[in-house]
Image 1 (spheres, rainbow, N blue to C red):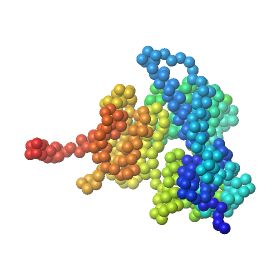
Image 2 (cartoon, rainbow, N blue to C red):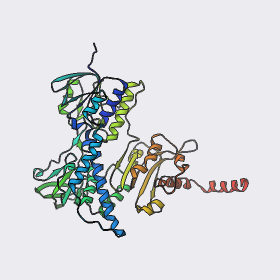
Image 3 (cartoon, rainbow, N blue to C red):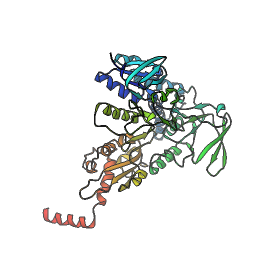
Image 4 (tube, rainbow, N blue to C red):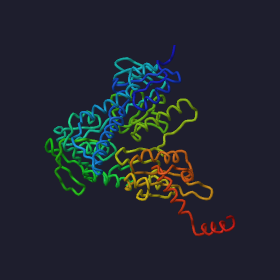
Length: 478
């Protein structure tokens, strides 16, 4: 008789949980996945995050491009139908849900339990009064949007990422609280659909984890589209269903009017219902205590995704899943490091960031060069009208016997998330910048900007002594 009911139990069915569960099942191990409901399968990404937001952004982009066509004589009239937009979002979710639902998981051979999970022992999880035991257990329960807790919030029309994609009518004026990726993406999408949008943030800039040189450009582009920003500011209270008092860092008050509020002030974990103490899992400051292998204080329980209290992205959860799969099957254990992590804010233009930032490089005493390239003279940027773009790269100093590597960077441009992919590959695999320099790019692909910046770097290495040597070589060998 088996000691445990399952080889592995996975609490949560988002990106991280599915990454682990599907592979373990393919290997032939006995897998139980636990989800609160069938509609929760796919996690925040499918249901309330990446998928619906990108569908909304696509709709908004189509509308915006149609309006821009007026420059060339075309006239676009009418108002965006938010109900049709919501219907489109649901349609795209349903396509992906075909392979992220309970019956599909069961068809693959995975057992599924629907309901709230809680620990009842070291290797035990209880769902709806049924106890399941597992040799290993993965906690991949995600996170939830943090609530805006200020006076008068109960009076307003309130949205977050769990409700904004169910809009039945578009607010004329919407107040966006928070200038992180979610807030900025939704702000632009709603603005392009027809709302008057105001963004409030306590920070001094939007997208605080990205480079100032690129965030400033994005902010300027958003302002050109009519979005208003109040930075270094916070909401003091709501004085009615459509008015709020805003306070800046100098203590000055301002009254802001709106029809609805979209809140994007971060995310938080919901750990209490898991009864982690029953499994000997320690928690500090509402965070699960883990080591650098994603292991909890219970050696048989691991975390994956948002509950790891690391960067809260779907691809980070997938990354955690790959680390755990390696460590569950190999004696050579991998540690979690975000040195090569990347992310994209899917505004228009996009802002993409990867690798180490300047603060991290300075803190680690890493010798580097900061390189910047404007797009004003890039041929593709000229014809496609995005000469405002910018690429920032951090490159190691290198030396006689050390290659120069790309340590990190940031780009703001249309499709920046796609354009930086080769730079991310170079960063994560420690390629020399020569790989970019020697690559043959079809003219005029947009990614030639990457080579252009590396070419600038190579040109700077032409010292007077080297130029003299090259002139001598030309005379001898030509």
